[in-house]
Length: 579
Image (cartoon, rainbow, N blue to C red; front, side):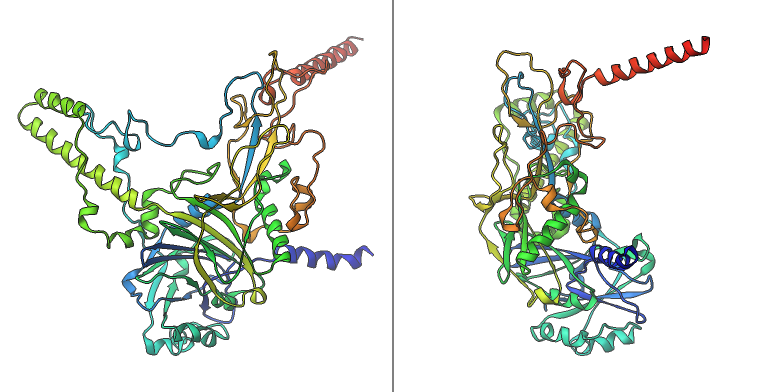
């Protein structure tokens, strides 16, 4: 019987780890070997009527020369195509990814409001002014280097050689590719036909396989390709990606717009379950758990597109996985394109007038200097004030609402390409739990401003002594100072390559999710106390039944017990030796 079940088990494991693929285009290689993608990240940046689009696909296949074929708007020229660093798209993925967050009960005898990670100020104080530099107008100090943050687009020389096909060449793309030594996948001409009829162009990016970054075996990570148009792009040609796929495809779409979040108007937009309480075991396996949750959602609604994040670019969620998007990152993803439409008077504003105190300090400093030194100081002072004013204006112009949309599909649940459209602001997945019941809203609802994220929570109740008359329980915040674990925000990343069968949502989700058929699991004992992991707290107990002072970070009773046991064993062994 075991022998009969073995093939079924192997097939089950293969299906559980079957890679996903996605690309708003297709691959063409030399020979008949398959060239596939696991997932694609697309960044769509808008301002006014202009758009900048960045496409970053994965690649799986033989490491021989191949080409990536994309369709682009009709006004795109070759000088509007660039290669970016992967880190810019990677940063967007990590900032918007579903996150695991731990709430810790504050010492019941410690007065005051519990502190949260996201309440730590990231703004410069009045004494330091803009971006941590000395106050502008204080002539006794040189303007700090922090003021000269990079704000230029970071364009790299990548692994691609770009060609934009002429109208005649585009009529026979398989023939053009064959002339270059590549073989287009079956059905390429028919798949391209509706896009060419709509006035789009064909962009061919030939890949130098010696310059790509390998991630293991025949799996490579390609650099992002950015192109821009004077038109507002709202369609993603995802159906082209079916030409370079086997099984399901994974697509992540990030939109950045100064005023609004975006949604898919021709599919159902589903809000991913958020603010769920989950088992501690899911902490370092967020990707596996979230992938399994996504599959449950697709069973209920195969055409549902997950809305996973909507937040201003000045922030990055509660808590942030790392620092918010930096000016040069936003400029590189498309901000430089929009800057060419900004009038010079907006780019070069006059510095604000000095206050009376600043003017007085400025005059005192000038009197202290003589000749050449005085002239150099006055010149530098005015130049730095202008640079600061320019950078402030540039940063103020490059503020966006960041949205993340996520779908997993094949031909059966992708009847048409995504059509993106503006959508109203929403909130959800944030806030602080209250009381012993740890009450926190898991609802995503319309709001005045966008503050929506996917967050899974876990709770660590206080387990130390309470040496006060009126302890105040159930105040939830960040870890205590005594916590010795790894202070890291775990996220659900690299989802296309996660095993989707290892983590059971029914076993991990302690909060009921009726829409997914999850009843919720009542944790045995107090959820979060003494659960495993090198960075988890351990409940310290002694033989007297009391708890050590210091709670999750302290306690020496187990260590004392071990030392006593060791001493007793040594004494007995020595006694035996003497006998």
